[in-house]
Image 1 (tube, one colour):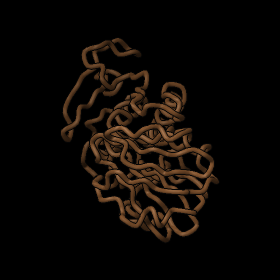
Image 2 (spheres, helix red, strand yellow):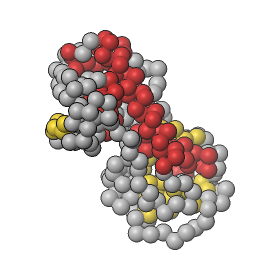
Image 3 (cartoon, one colour):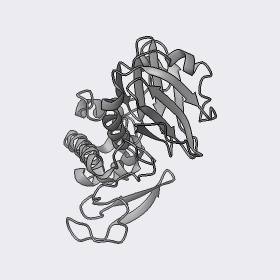
Image 4 (cartoon, one colour):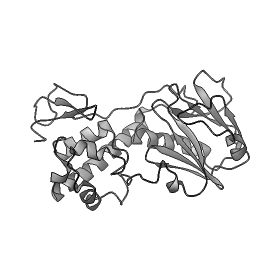
Length: 271
């Protein structure tokens, strides 16, 4: 499932090929995504330039003068830039045909993604307005987490995965960040002190930055790709390594279940 680093890698990969170009046509082969693709979308975008492409959490925001196209990749969605009109395959649901001779193709086998249109400030959209800060932004700091953790007695791993607290810390990145910060994932969030919270902020930043950097070298090119390239994994210290020796101390990595998700941690480094 695409997480924040994968979505940011996608943004960086396609932005140079689409920003400043004008949409000539929108070809919608399948409207039944997580929410129906607006029937008016081709008419809304045709003839309009793409001013810029940004990201909020796991949403890609295509900025136009009169509104924003909000794209979510769901569980299996990909975006690829094509240099010609290659024949569409079964799961190629939408093409944005551009005036620079290229087209942006959206593929989504499971159809849990979305393409939605919004006028006004993107931050006011119902999907975006309640989100927490970006983890690589100045708004994400120890003071923010201290306030967010107050009176939150749930396990820290589940709290940092809450998009209302901070966006983009999915299951893999939560386990890895807590390992780097030397914090037991079972600790109640409201028991962490300022020093521990400060370590956690830095660990989340470092983990996501490393993941984005890895994505830049391990994903296939976004131009003329078949769209089936797999997403990367970090060189993990904890996630997926149950029973293997900790890379730091040699203790066997433990696995447990939290909120229907697998959690991995080192009993020695994170006690």
